Image 1 (cartoon, rainbow, N blue to C red):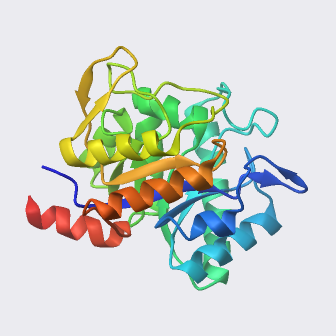
Image 2 (image 1 turned 135 degrees about the vertical axis):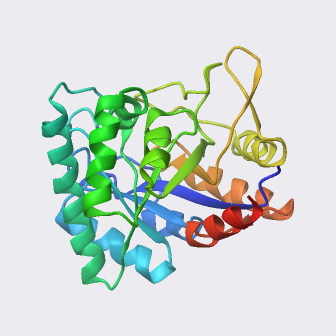
Length: 264
């Protein structure tokens, strides 16, 4: 079925002290999204930035999400780090807890948790780690959504465990024929209208064209773009305008999930 209501999420707070990666201000991007994945200190972010980003999210009515990563500031969390499931999950606990306290400080709640970069990709393929992660979520954040891909092990394990879950479509990343995104450490400059048209087609047809030139099915409730993709503000602005112009409403996941359950 066509997607007529969708969440838009973006990774924000991805800086550290005086260092900035994105060419767009978080305050401008916050006006265009409904969910924010906020860096919690391990791949980017620091206490002052986390506080400021959470405050912005509450001011704009944007859903607050923790964006935990491998402990990899130098590699921006896009390098896989070996560790036991317990070690990795404990790092996730640490980051969720820090972000949640900033949300509480500003009168907000933790809407979701979305792992970042290499950790996201590892969870998508690693059943043992996904089960440890979802077990953690059932304990510390049983009412918070997990954001992940529809084909991922994470999604299957979350559904089995009864953890709220949101599937994502990546507007600014390529897909291969398996349905996985093509992992990259550095985003390239993209044509905003081409990104918008790709997202609109996914909403209207449930299809995405792969790097092999084939169409595959894609199921999602949220569209993701990255703040560190060059031209991210223009991408988000054109995409949002294109979706709305063609009858796709942007809404927070709290509205989308009840509607989805009713339709099923």
